[in-house]
Each structure stands twice: as structure tokens, then as C-alpha cells.
Amino acid sequence: MTRPTDLQPLNAPTPEVIAQFTNIVGPTNALVESGAQAAYLREWRDRYVGKTALVLRPGTVREVAEILSLANETRVGIVPQAGNTGLVGGQIPYEDGNDIVLSVARLSRVREMDATGQSITVEAGITLAHLQSIAEGAGRLFPLSLASEGTCQIGGNLATNAGGVNVLAYGNMRALTLGLEVVTAEGRIWSSLKTLKKDNTGYDLKDLFIGSEGTLGVITAASLRLFARPAEKATAFCALDNLDKVLEFFARAEVAAGPYLTAFEFISRAGMEIAVQHVEGARNPFHDIAPWSVLIEISSPEADGRAEAVMESFLSKAIESGIVADAAIANTIQHANDFWRVREEMSDAQKFEGGSIKHDISVAPAQIPDFIGRANAIVEKLCPGARPVPFGHFGDGNVHYNISQPRDMDKAAFLDKWEEIASAVHGLVADMGGSISAEHGIGRMKRADLVRYKSPVEMEMMRSIKHALDPNGIMNPGKVV
Image (cartoon, rainbow, N blue to C red; front, side, top):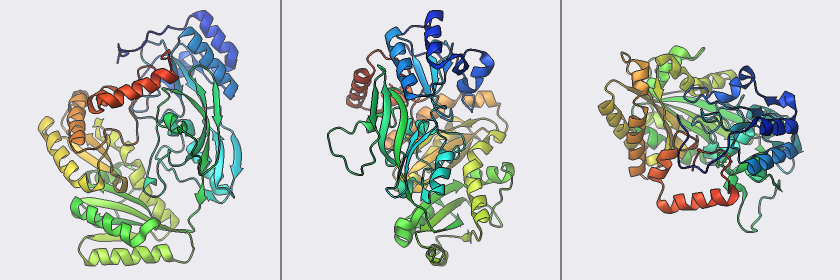
């Protein structure tokens, strides 16, 4: 994929400029050999494979500031990167090799833990799993949970406003953030690592950088919200006959469990079949795979059996009324983990079915049945025999509308249809008032779509913000706007 032609002109880094960058971080942390760079240049699905003259691994905020100051002065593009788990190519440089990759991986310190005040301040390179572990050790919960949590880093989670399976109860990354430390495109350090729950003093600048995908500056640290750990959880797998019943089931779950409803994930029959076949240890809890499955979790702050009691009562009534065909409640922690493995590894398991065209969209939860029905019809018309594998976070309307190739079709030929199918699916989403990116971001993949579906006024405002904070256009050029 070539670099977009509508960007401000930038310079390729000269040997002299590369030497200056190297002096900032030291030769050990300035990677120039292709073997050392490889992990930073390839997106895990191999959709994007970039090139660079240099990968920089700064170890301090001051080094980040010096890098951006030099990049701004010499007009060299910088591609910020955290754990390299992004799915829209936002963290991968273009193939011309003119941009420099800036990895935040070495910025991995915990700066402050305030268990009483329920906050933690960490640097951008700490992995999500490590942060979860630190919070757990302090008797607290950091609720963001993603399939890639062992690898993804907090800087990337912030830059993409990550969501995951607990958004229903706790919100996405924006809702979990109290303050930020950011290095601007000009190399200035803005530190606002406040842990205040209320701060109504003008524009909330942190919200400009959360979800900006590295196009406005580099997030180097964040103050994040912690929560009391649930004392108990009840987890169940449920079988349902159709999506209209899933919608009614969700509405009843909200009433029955209230704020104790912490997850409500839905999976199509095709998704369950793929998981059972390809995910080690995965199994269908029922005799037959249902048209639709729901993974539901209810949490309680008290270890008094309340979560399980609510779950049992609620499911019993749902089965009696014919909404749920069958249900299985996890009776051990391992049993619950096995349920979650099916959901978390299902997307990766699609690799074994050949090519996969993936969409990360959102519509109102009440529109999910209509969206999937209409999208399936569109896909069948454009590619007969293609196999939709929809699943996702029903409670917040986020559908991962994935499509596996027809069994008898060449993989490359199927993937050549990506733009045609994605355009049609995104057009449907727009017609329904939804979003073409629920939690993965825009990156390289959806840059043209953003212009297509955002209003001219919205695009003008976004470009104005970009120009104001990055006047030379060095930050992640060719991504988002």
C-alpha cells in the first residue's frame, strides 16, 4: 500500500539525522538491522508489512521529547508504537521506509499506586496483563480486558480508546482515564497526571489524545481508575434460537442483574463451530451447537452467593419463558475460564478456515438482529458461499462482523474482495446510524472510509486539530486524517 498523496511533504531521514536520533537513545536502542526491526514492522495478520530506516526505543520521557523535537525540526515522520497488536495498521510504517518507528516498550514503570484512592499511574509501555496483575496484588481491579492483553501495552490501549468485554459495566479506555502525560509533536512535555474525579477547568485535553492513534503526540504515561474487585462471579453459557431472543434476553438481563451485569457476549453458530474445532480445550457445553450462544457474567461485591443466586433465578425464568433453549453455569473458576477461552480465541481460530475479512462496527443493540440479517444478504450477493462469523459485545452494540472465505475458494481471490465487501458493509452501518469502527480505530485501513462517512464539518474540525497540534505533519503520517 502506497503512502497517501494528500499529506504534507516530509523528508526521508539522512544518515546524519539517523546518527542524531541514535545519539539520543544510544546504539543499543536504535535498531537498524532488518532482523532486529522485524517484530516492529509486521502486523500480526500480515495485512501490513512496513519498512523503516530506524526503530527507536527511548527509555525516558525526556528521550521521547528529544526525538520528537528533532523529528519536527528535520521534518521526519514518526510512527508511535506500543505492543503492535493493532488491527487497522495504525502502528505500522509505510512501505517506502521514510518514517521512523518510536516504540514505547521501555517506558514500563509503575509511577504511583493509590489503592485507597483507587488509582494507578503507569507508563505507556506496561502491558495490560501486567497492569491487571499489579492492581490485583493491591486488592483492586483494572477492568479493561482484551484477547491480546498479554502483549498489548497501555499506550496503545489509550491511543485507540480500547474497549473489550467489560465496557458494558466499566466503560472503554477513555472512561478509565483520569490524567495523561503526553509529548507533543514539537517535543514539549505536557504532564497532567491528575487523579481527580472532577476537574472542570476548560477543555479536557486528554480526550484529544485518547483515540488519536498517535497522530497528535506520544502518550508516555497515564493515571487510570481502579475499582473494587468483585468478591464473586457467576458465569454461564446460554443457547438461543435466534437474535431476536438474544435481544430480549439482554433486556431481561439488564433488569435482573442491574449493575451486577458485567459481560454479555454473543457468538454465532459458525463462530462456535470454528472455536470447537480449532481452539485447544474448547467444547460446546450443549448436545448440539445452537444458532446463537451468549456468554453472560454477573458479578457481586459481596461473597454471599448473590451472583450465583441471581444467575440461577434469571436463567430459570428465561428457560421457562422460552427465550433461552438451554444454559450451563460454570461451577469452578477453571470452568468459567474455559467458557471465556471459546470467546477470546475464536477470532484467531478463523485463520485455520482460510482468508477472513473482518469488520469492527457498532449499531444500537436493538439494531443488531436487523444489521446481521441485512449484512449476511449483502455478503452472499457479493461472494456466494462466504461464511459470516458475527460475534461481539452485544450490550454496547459492538459487532465483530467477520467473514470466512467459501470453502472452495482461493484465499487470495477472496481477500481481493476485501474493499468491495467492506464498502458495502460499512455503507449499511452508515445507513443504520452506526459506526464503522467501534474499538479498533481508523489507522491505515479505514482512512478513506472516514472521509466517506464523516461529515465535511467533522473532517474539517479534525484536520484543524491535527494542524494545530502537529503543524508539520510528522506524527503518524497517513493515518486517520
